[in-house]
Amino acid sequence: MFSHERIIIRRGPESGQPIIVAVHSTALGQALGGCRLKPYADWRDGLADALRLSAAMTGKCALAGLPHGGGKTVIVGEHSEAALRDAGTVIEELGGIYATGPDVGTGPDDMVTIGERTTHVFCRPVAAGGSGDSSPGTALGTVAALRAVCSDRFGSAGFGKRSFALLGLGRVGGRVARLLAEAGAKLVVADADPAKRALADELGAAWVTPGEALTAAVDVVVPAALGGVLTPDSVPTLRCAAVAGPANNQLDDPATATLLHERGILWAPDYVVSAGGVIGATAVELHHESPARVAARLDGIADTLTAVFAAARRDGVTPSAAATAEARRRVANPRG
Ligand SMILES: NC(=O)c1ccc[n+]([C@@H]2O[C@H](COP(=O)([O-])OP(=O)(O)OC[C@H]3O[C@@H](n4cnc5c(N)ncnc54)[C@H](O)[C@@H]3O)[C@@H](O)[C@H]2O)c1
Image (cartoon, rainbow, N blue to C red):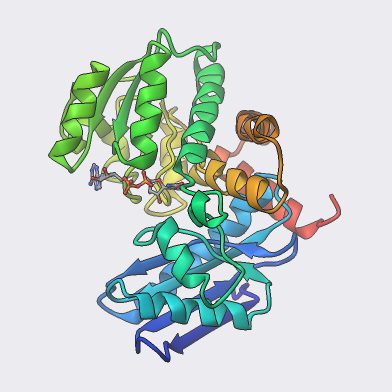
């Protein structure tokens, strides 16, 4: 079904690179969504990502309780300042119905470059007046989500008796690993980058291959690298009780949520788990909230997830279906 409000595809006047901006929904307010920069083999693959990811942002903002909708920018090709400025030009032409931030391939410094052409940009460095890197907020939100998962699955939100397998020790995964280790959890970790082994050693975590982490016999697997790890091939090999992590698009297909459910594995929808970044950035940059209020909002991810799990049980559906239904309900009823 065609559901996007606006899609712009433009050959960047300065860079010549394809610039794609998809605004999925502004029903709840200004659309938000990061700027992905990637050398796609075909620009149409970038368009497909923009359509899918902007729709996912609508659900993410709605379930995070934010007065925002979903959008996405995709720059096709190599990293260049000219392409970032081109993205800023397109975003500015939208007149404020959409604002961007960092995503795969871009970071806070790139938001300064986009900001040369538009004011509708988030997560610029703190020194440039922004809220900076969103990954600390994403990590705190993920840990709140893991508390809700442990509470639901094991009857206690504590991490002391729990074991976790983390896939990816990057900006978010590295922080999550540290917070879990500090709380006394047992960790198995993996990263495609062998340099990350130093962090594993520092935290006393077992270092394994990414494949071994996914299939480790632990309480919770935490995907914190790339998406697409949950497939009809991988789900039968899992030996965990739950999967919950910040990696975007963990399911290869929505139907894979049913496979997890049938195996009795609790899956926490990734867009609920990873909402801490956008919650933190909007709380700081748009609503100028106090650190205590921001922390409370990030903690609220646990309540959202608990409500999703309860609705899933009540309605006899997967947590994924329950989250989608609640997001749709909120978007269809902007006044609550
Ligand atoms: N940074 C945020 O605020 C944020 C917000 C929402 C969602 N996310 C999602 O969380 C995930 C992690 O984000 P990040 O900011 O930490 O990214 P990052 O690039 O800092 O870290 C990703 C890590 O995963 C590793 N990796 C890549 N491929 C791997 C593989 N096949 N197996 C194991 N490890 C692999 C990389 O070496 C890197 O250390 C991504 O899916 C991202 O889209 C991040």
